Figure 1 (tube, rainbow, N blue to C red):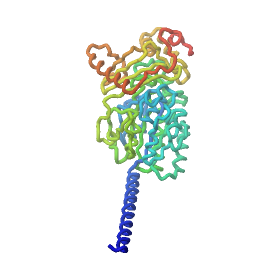
Figure 2 (tube, rainbow, N blue to C red):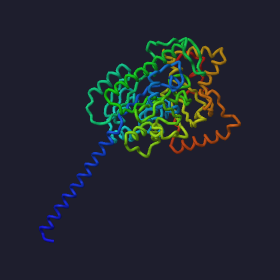
Figure 3 (tube, rainbow, N blue to C red):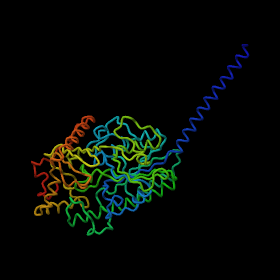
Figure 4 (cartoon, rainbow, N blue to C red):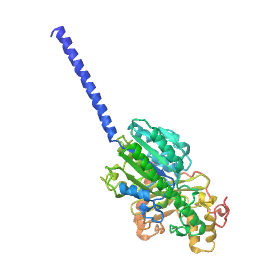
Length: 476
């Protein structure tokens, strides 16, 4: 080959290589753009202290929530959604990290994630999303630890509407959006003027019917009515600014601040609404009884957003459940509670199947107390004085109040039929095998996850009745 021919051959190959590289780059860009066009915008609407049982899509006609009903009609209602822990900080940290409280460090309420704990918000960003948080999404100063692109902490509904509207109207980012919007409803205090008649409210079977309880219940209803109405605003805004390809989710961080709700491992504290719609993807009017946990929520969003879900999480995607491709997700739900400041010091753990729940109260020598019975603030827990007075000469009230403060070490409920967990069948001779099986599963999980079963503050002991006993009506 002549020198001229060699140089001609070399130049042609160089051009070919550059063309191939350019074509590969172009194909990569086109693929990324195609994927981006398939990525939905995501809106996650979070409420604060809303039990699944307290809304009409889940069977409570006393608390009409027509917007939640419309969302369920447009998409899918999950009937067995549970939080990782029934207080604000642990629940939200578990959602945002995909890790249980013992692993991310947020066990007691008002604590923060352990240094170095990864945030799944960054995995959404790696998938190409802008991620914004308005209102109460994370808890307290924790919100800055999770890496949102935009944060605004105002959580009152009137402020939320204005701020989200302004953000969406001025947004010029050429990325899909994952928008978290968290209201403070229906967290206490329930101060809005209620439109509900206290005479017409209902009660769970483990509550005591008193005038003050009815007033509080009516005020609680109002908070739920208002958060439901805001869902219509949020759906309208997302339609105007984000188009049709929007995945919208409504859920709550745990149950409400009622006795046997928040700060407890009964379903009234841990089982939450989870309703989601995605036009053209989720079949309208779907219902699923697949068991899912809040630690699964962000892995699901990352999966749907075509990101890479980290493989070292406790949570895992239930996207195929939403899309109707699967009918099951988890066989077991594990839930933990440690406590909340110096008001609630009562660590407990539970394991739940579709049919059974086993609760381990780690320190049955402690008195179970919390902000409601100790503080007794108006429109938060003031009804407790009437409960304590009623318990002095009413056997049913005495039994409810006694059960509230003093728990056995183990509780077993056939939750398939005992919705309110009223019959503890732990000692039933027919249940020896189910007790043994669930005890082992719970013990294995505690060991495998490194749960130290922490007592975070000085407890109130049952042997010190002056610190908790209902005979003493004045708060501490």
